Image (cartoon, rainbow, N blue to C red; front, side, top):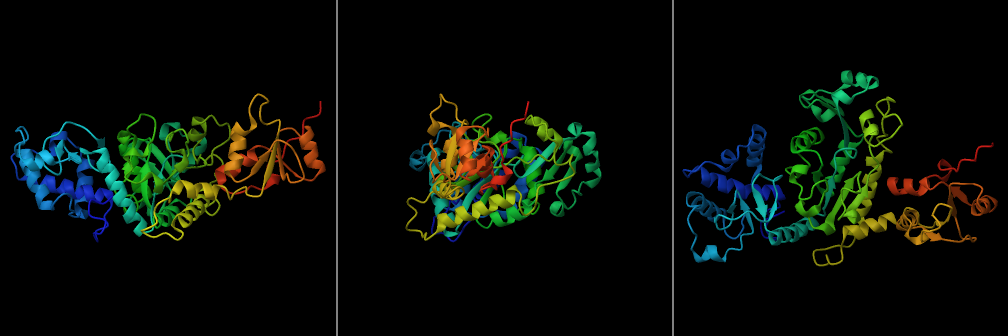
Length: 458
């Protein structure tokens, strides 16, 4: 998100821009008699290291004046924070944001307000109007670079982790196969003794991030805590090429046990989400691409009540070329292509990544006409049933009655009248899982893989 004019040649990321403001305040604070914000808040060593890393890449930007203006006002604020501010320039300031309780434009001490963006830097808060302004500005910059935003979940989406105490005897062999943490770029299985856990990266994840970063500004958003999120980011992005400071954890969320785009500095109309949980995003389901869960460890299967063996117990793994990430990358490329088709800076109106995603989804079962047989309860209105709606979202046409144009009958019993009709007329007779699999995997599945089991003879 840029704090500079849209016409500025500076195309820095959101965290870089805020870092420049923070640096100006920290520099001015070091010249005063007061201690730095980090010392006052007792930041630990890891946050200090992160701050030093940020300083190495920060660039000065303009926001309601030059950086020198910000430095000067911040110095006054730190030295005289208990005094009333009476200058007309301060009175006119709209206080777009604050750092450590100090307005980063005029230097006035403020009551806590706005939205916290602690993942960018501890103490940063932004007024909702400023967030909206930054999103508008950044969208123009992203469009010029032909990029959108992609928010990525960690667990069961990009990787799978387990605590060491929950590893089964069948999984003990994994300890000897773990990759060195000294150079994580070539490995996918890591033993993190200091965190008492083991992590397995999903097949194809490194290629996925590399290709996705060409089309999207990438965020991590996990329900794990901040130390876990940062450690996983180091495994996924050891050179810091993809995520920068855009690593959001549950410590940064505004609603407990939920995720929201209110702390993502990207316009909702250009944000896609990859996550294995639909319930985590109650307000943004139209932005969501639901991922098939990655169950590498046995504890992952147990967590969701599955009785089948995990990939590690089977000594197997997903396919690099046909796995979930390889598949969803094709979807992302298609959405990106549709969004930017014929676009220029003057025709952004009506462009919405959610509409592009719906268009891609409708291509999956296009041309299919489906009739359900004893799948939808009699008391339920067919068009309101989740499978009916899912099929239509995938581009199929649904009907209550059979006719020659019907291509598929979805049932769980081969003995129903419609099932017998499908067999006689040589139509596809499939289990409801056929629709659900197409929805998860983003392509039409082979019908022969979803047969209806014949009833057992008594």
